[in-house]
Length: 161
Ligand code: ZN
Image (tube, rainbow, N blue to C red):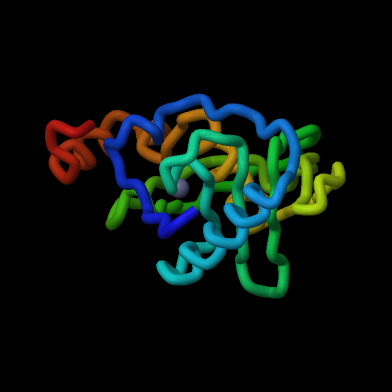
């Protein structure tokens, strides 16, 4: 796979609706591992494949606490509650947007062995997983900004937004 790098906004790959993977092969396993490595290098807690220029439905998370997740073709099957928190993104350095999301989710997907797994998550982990799934649908944190926040972001991002 060579060396992956973090793709930054406004690269068009970040706006793609990513394709599901057909199966988990050695190639996907390598991608999971390289993404995790890159994410740790930049002190991120989540990273989605389009953020390394690969438009497939794959993401990794590690919020510490030993909860490391590698998931392909994720789908949220249940949500509960809701809370607001400021989120950042490795593809949008120095930008934070407060986002309201469900506080508890159940997500199903394929793990690195190609097995269907169900993950129950709440709090920060639920938030990160939802953030990464947004990436797979071409959605970014700036899309959640209200009118005033958008004006503020425009001065930071300039014509790119
Ligand atoms: Zn992000």
